[in-house]
Length: 291
Image 1: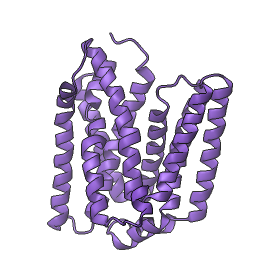
Image 2 (image 1 turned 30 degrees about the vertical axis):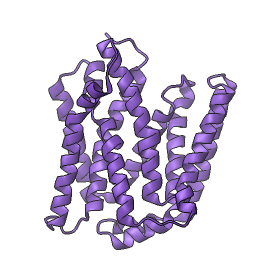
Image 3 (image 1 turned 90 degrees about the horizontal axis):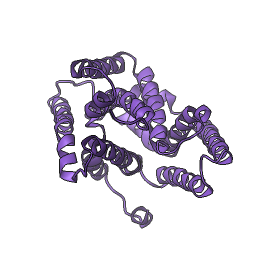
């Protein structure tokens, strides 16, 4: 905040570079052991898991090509629930409020991100190939209404859990502070910087910590960061390689009607779909003893 309040502006290229480095170091790795998590918790074959994962990615990518508006809405809805579920995964909340709170929290921060960066989004839809179909959906009044509604629902659900003693007062106030800071960061920072900071620091790093503890229990002993990094390395490398292929196809104009940014959005959305499913099962089973 001190950087931007001092009048320093980062170019789009500098923002993208910061985002790319952060996503490669934390964002991509946090989904790189979905196979380990799911196969350990469910009695399914590795072959069945990989078939499911690849089919989910392929179908989602096809949907983006033929129904982009439906795809972006589905992506935002899935992401909202996934982000909120991760945020409250370490609490034992009232069952009747868990799903509502998870979705409302995620929808609150995403609607704030869209609302406070409307100018950047409008410029994106007019200057970058592939994003033009989203131009008419950028309605500030709609985003404001969604932000207020989902923020109110989040506060109500948090208050109910506080009343039922699922939160201490300190935990309740902490979650309010975190929500306020995430929203404020979207207001202060450019879109790319604000989302990258949230996605890598608050979301991905938290998930990596949970995954580390899960894998450590599997080995029933202390797990070094080096050993954990080796588990993350194969699929992180594959994902980075896939991003490189997409960039190369874009630069060589093999896919001339789609920009690299749009192709990257399709890739991220397609990976998010099966990852969110795996993490949903993980959070619902992580309290159970490991056989």
